Length: 193
Image 1: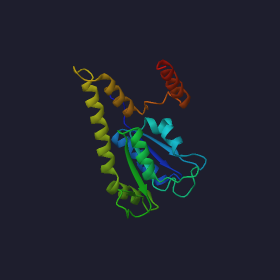
Image 2: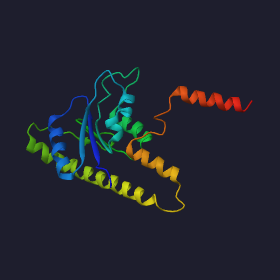
Image 3: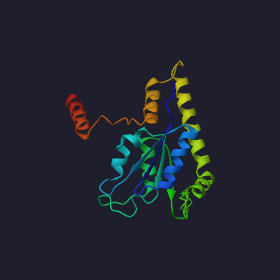
Image 4: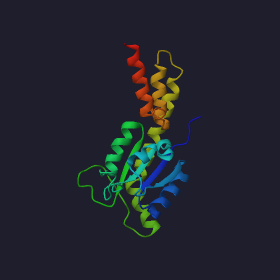
């Protein structure tokens, strides 16, 4: 049985009308909805390692999440977070929401400027609904393809496990720390003496 698709909305200031829209949509399209409020004491690494983010198939993140604050000595935008997240988990579908115009043609989804739910719903039905529907279909298709490949002969099971882990949000190196890697290198060097 294929697990339910999971969508998470991440923002430093959760938009209540977008939340209401996504919650209603989760019932219609049958996906698990979560949200994650980002705070100034965190950095992008906290989000990548966050269990809700890791277990989500679809990520909706605000463009200016990191832009107006210093994260350590660096600043990150939602677009840069998408790049980092999809490097670690290439099967995640990541959408950027923004109040700004998409001058760089990055593919923003414009946040609703309306203050009532009905107008907000119409706006998101026009700019977001189809993207979420397509992403859900892609996630389900990938899971079904993976399931079908497990029983085929000649398929590299290690590769399938890596793909499965990536889809489920399990990083290859979650269990390894820098110290663990250093110990392995040290042991390897001792063998080569």
